[in-house]
Length: 116
Image (tube, rainbow, N blue to C red; front, side):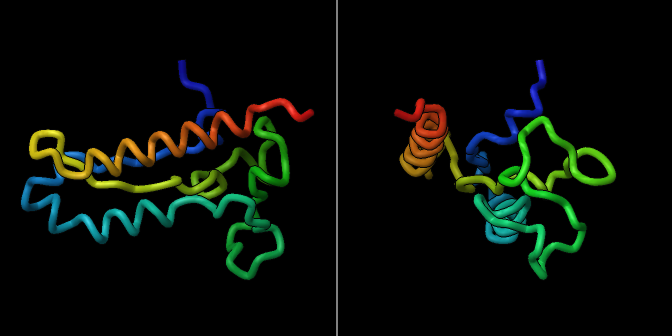
């Protein structure tokens, strides 16, 4: 049931169980690391000095295409729209999580609207 096109959609990463001391201590570094995976949406990485691997972004080719030398790598897909921390048990970050999920759904819906 896996569909590689799912990686093209806007998404939110939720770091759960943030109420645990070890999770809370690692929150900043983990959120920063996750936020930096992938390319900026709309970023043209083909001529960028930051383009170390020479891959083509999803915004330059269709989602079925592959980059030169093989399939797309994780860094060729868009970055997460947001990384939020939450604890359902302690009711921490739930409102922010829901807000970011709604924003991602709106963005996904907006991209699918037919042009008139």
